[in-house]
Image (cartoon, rainbow, N blue to C red; front, top):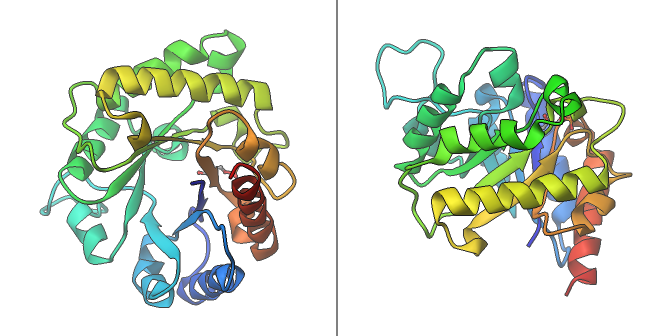
Length: 256
Ligand code: 13P
């Protein structure tokens, strides 16, 4: 199975989100061999988008997850609230949260801990900034992120753990990571995650994110053991998102 996650980031009002969600459903109608498709709208649109997705093959995800269950935590949305809004997935540790809003490895760990006690499926985002890449330190950097997030964490072996490798320098950039870089890092991340978590192979899903579009999606998806892609900008264009979904379907058919 391949997974395509659309991270809409801080874009689209409720009406626009519903319209885009309808477009995504249209793409999937009557199609065979589809990937699992997950869309992550802004929090304000979750509820209406969920109604739109009812009886469709598209799942709902959130862009972050609060640490505590409830209480005086202004601006946070708890795992319970996300489940109440019928989210199935939630991103955690996205590089924009880490680098723009200062979310540390420690807070990412706490968010993951909160999710691990619920049915929410986590999509842990990791990836190195350009300075670390230039210094050839990407593996150490990503290992720290993975260890800090996952070491000693009690995980349900029956629930998948998604890890998205999103090098910071490739997000919203002109160029994505090269296929070779992506293959190396995703294999490395799978190895480290397996060692730390002791999860069965099939429970660990590795995605690539960073300037994925309809032109390059096929190359990313057919390579290595990558389980899918996490898409930002291109998920806001129905034509580009359709191209990415088609690329995933083509890979699924070719690999059957
Ligand atoms: P872009 O696809 O716009 O590079 O964004 C990637 C990303 O951050 C997805 O979470």
